[in-house]
Image (tube, rainbow, N blue to C red; front, side, top):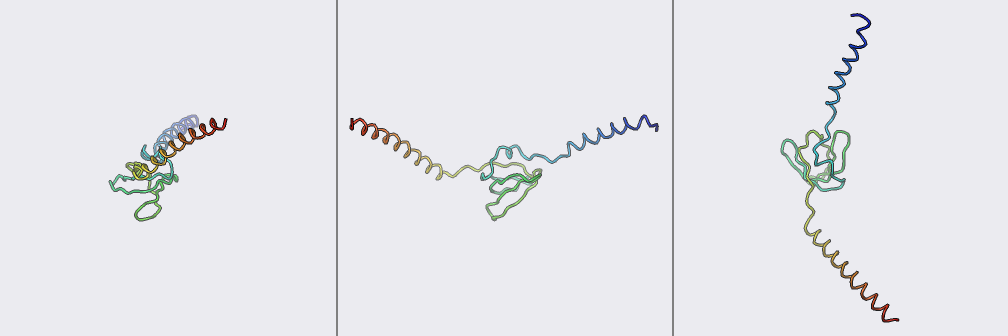
Length: 124
């Protein structure tokens, strides 16, 4: 092989191998994992169709880190082994309690303002 052909041949060979290496990068996991904030309760489904409930902690390289509910342990799962990660619905008791406190705050603000206005007008 002549000296003139070595550099273009090496460049073409490097381009071919670099394009193959780009697709070998670790995956980003399921799309449902991208929008979750850390600390959220989730249901994790693996590609083997096994599932468990856990708290989403975050990513560590090519692994997803979860704190399982039962048994209580921290695990790291490869992103390419995950099928789906769904947020668990919040409990209804908590929602009812929040709604009750919101209603109480609304009425306290409404009647508190009316009483304040009445006291201000009465004093004049």
